[in-house]
Length: 489
Image 1 (cartoon, rainbow, N blue to C red):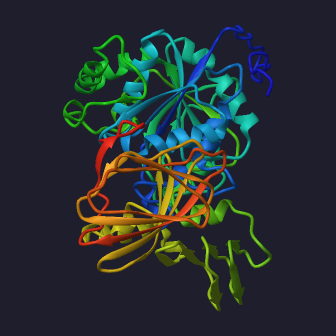
Image 2: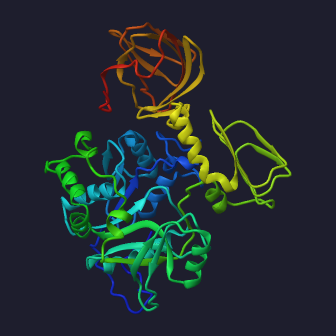
Image 3: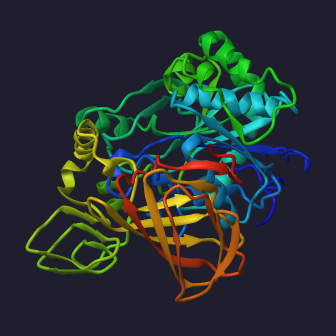
């Protein structure tokens, strides 16, 4: 991809920026995406799902700025539970050069961005940061990068720059930015931020031609944002600074829970952008969607002649204007219009398309009943690979396990269960007590209850096996780790 440093200015003559200017991308991935249940769950939220195309939304965000000479390596702020998932996603995207900040609990976007600014300020307080949510769909990458370039001059002069999407319809599901419409300027002065409007207000905003959709994407110097946090949310800045008291801090940075849980939970719109007098907005004209619901996904998707988006093994008859998705088994729908049907491995959602925002209420009900379907899938990611529950009874459980090439599980034991491993493909290196054994395809090994053991893939292809557990208690918390390559306890 060519450098952006020589892009011409489109509103008057723009001065080119120096070749050594580097913008630090900041990727925020703390969202849970409850409206996209059952695909999106707390341990595998929507930003890590492949909803549009083969890449996850997180990988699409990374790839907007990857391998571009205008950008330095990224800072990623995420939930600590997603550490190994993010590292795997970054490897798949072809990048391992990033700084990862892991939050122990969610405190909204102002603390998250403050942490990123403090990380960047360790090397250069005047670093320019491009802050991006990890779960948005942006169709035209070149237009996005050109618009980022349009905001550089204001960011360098100390403004907090946000990017507003040129609206295409009176949308009631987005926030808006009211701005002064100066047609000769690349950036516009912000008058106010507006919460999600009703239909009549949205119509008036579109007619006035002085409103943009609020994208939640920002560009500013680290020092400019930290000055604003000091002015409007000093308690947040004080707590975040405590985390960076150690000058020799390393990454991944696991933020201390005892410190961070005391931090106020404040969105960057409410805490900073709505209160600052130094905010500029740059219009961004491209197809954009925050994919906040299944209807939003239907709206952006390619459709057949009946207005349907069909994903996976789906057969329909007399169905119109619907989004139907199968993650595996055959799904059939007959005689319905304007519906959402999503079939995952362990849950099915059926909803009116117009009610897709209310999926969040289903998730809240499931959470109140302590159902596991809100936080994990049957296919569970681990730093060494994956496992999936195939069958389960009162005193047994069957899992399908995949161990990545060169990876190994922790050295561990269980107090309440025994395990029987059957190798389907690949070669397993097994530690069993004091022994080390190799188990080949179509062979098996038995691990008695209470015996320390470890499973390793010494080969260059994935190791596939079936695990049969038996015992009085089969929970994942019956693991005593004696040694682990990934620092887990």
